Amino acid sequence: MSSNSENVTNIFMSIRSTIARVVSHIVPPKEIEDIVQETYVRVCQVENQDEIVHPKSFLLKTAKNLALDHVKKAETRLAISMDDDLELEFVEQRTRSDDTYDRVAANQEFSHFCEAVRHLPLQCRKAFVLKKVYGFSQREISKELQISESTVEKHIANGIKRCSYFMESLNNPSAASVSTVVGQHGVNK
Image (cartoon, rainbow, N blue to C red; front, side):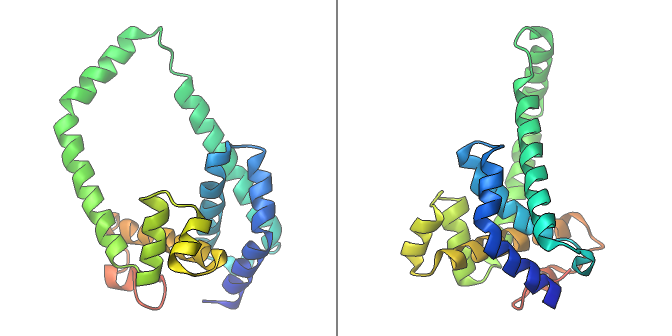
């Protein structure tokens, strides 16, 4: 991990509550934690972190943009008018005809995701599964695994990052091998 990457992580941890507060003014309460986690993952995925001149501002801006994107997507979903019965009927017919294909594709994607989770380090995997599968809060996970909440947060962010890279490597044959992407010593790309 580069020193600037460590610096970004340290800054993220120090302003995490500020990021949550900024995001809380934009998205519903149940979405705040996911946006905060996604902010960390996105910043970690930046290829040239050395070019980030003001990491604190960069983190806050990234969080704000993710929150605004989330709201836009929600508004778009709500914008579908129930008066447009013809379009809805077409979508329903298409959905029914593609149901088998969609189920097979979803099963295959879920299988790949499970494989990605299996590659996570044990403690990271436990925290990740408790959060993403069982919906535990960070405090509950902390008590369950007897680790600090900040460690839980790091495990979850690391799990998201590793699983994202794993899935990306499957979709992009030119990417590094799966063993390189989800190695013991961190996520490489």
